[in-house]
Image (cartoon, rainbow, N blue to C red; front, side, top):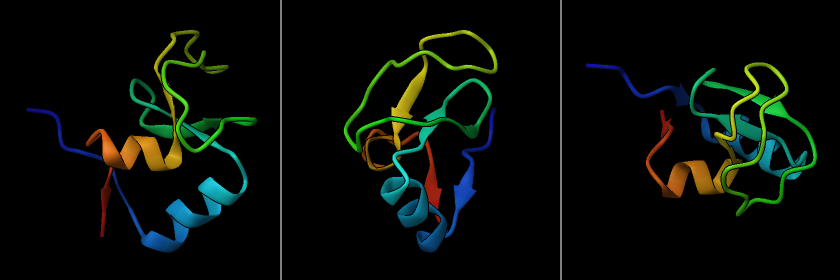
Length: 66
């Protein structure tokens, strides 16, 4: 079983304010220019369309707040 990536609320807020996107494959914030509700944007690291906006990643259960 894969563990869900965990970030602090401050890290998620910074990513949200900076319009960073979270890749569910890389499990990192890898993309700039993402709206908070973005879904399935392309990842510049792995090339897959698995990037979500920071808040959308939380809502969809891809990342957890610690």
